[in-house]
Length: 372
Length: 93
Ligand SMILES: [Zn+2]
Image 1 (cartoon, rainbow over the protein chains, first blue to last red):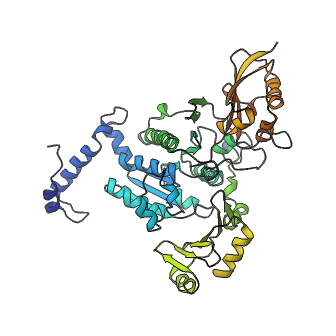
Image 2 (image 1 turned 45 degrees about the horizontal axis):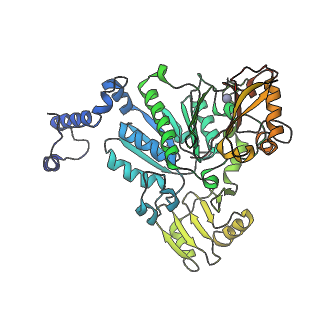
Image 3 (image 1 turned 60 degrees about the vertical axis):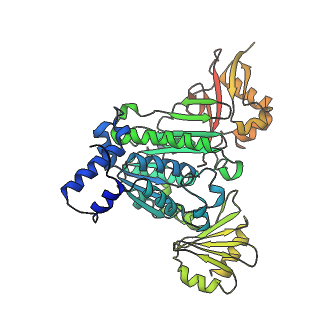
């Protein structure tokens, strides 16, 4: 009884989605029970926990190394609605650790969320996966996150994390931070109304560097899997309502020299503009401008420009083909410039200038080929 | 004669601490240990503090289980086996 139908039976009985056939629904239930049986045998989850997971809406922001591991866990666990957000496309240097991607994705210049959705929907076709190719900004962050039961951090910079932290605390949504670089990782669960926030943890000293990144000091893949999996565990607990099991504090791991530290999270700072004063500074108009300023993507020989004016890829392809080698898919356009640099254009207006870290040089190439 | 405590720093900063990411220091108070740490390892200082002597953003210095940033005072007498742990908030992903 517990066996799923054979492939031939299945193709015979396959009907359009939305069919109301009672037998079909029964098969579906059996299939669901089988798919999640091992997880439902785990007492803290059980059948009722599985229902809660199936009803959950989870947003994973950033589909790089952490994000792919997290999304893999969420999809296999049966999260009912999974929204995945990322601005990048798959590159060869991602394959060492970004576990949902392969060489074909690199060849096709697939945006990460598109490649991830293809893979995840083959892993679990019963859940709704919503890929969003976008840079998370003060303008769109609330819309991307509204309605979520929790937000999982797969980003690679503190600027975006502080934005997510602001939105999550504004909307009252738990935010599960994770970071990994080198052989080192950290994770913590921030719950509005219960814990302090990421801004409290990071402190308010100088505005100095944003810390080492995977693009500057490297990273080994196991630390990614460990941190992302720890984030996924906390997500499962929150989804099934196992609040007493939720890990408190900041967990710090160094796996090359085997150090593990479980540290206290800061107390809520009385002057924290996010969790105490509820001002959410990254969402204020002032910071808004910053989203469109050219930025050097550290360690990647890339400058990112624009993002405030939509780009018609077809039109740009026709224009750029006169002087450059152009490749294009529905999500992006890549042009090899005679100057040696490469431009990658996205429909939302973002342009990556690859092959330089000089903002002035990047801006001049942008003006020359895209127009100011 | 001070109290012997253990200090750990991230492997990425061990260039500044003679290649070691765990070592010992002897001091009487937390304040003294923090001063001695940067006196013995001057290269570490610029990673931990800005030009105003404030702990840099994203640097977390824990005395046992508490971040020194939220202690009221630093002239706390040390006890044998105390731990001073330097961490950097991790941004990669
Ligand atoms: Zn806070």
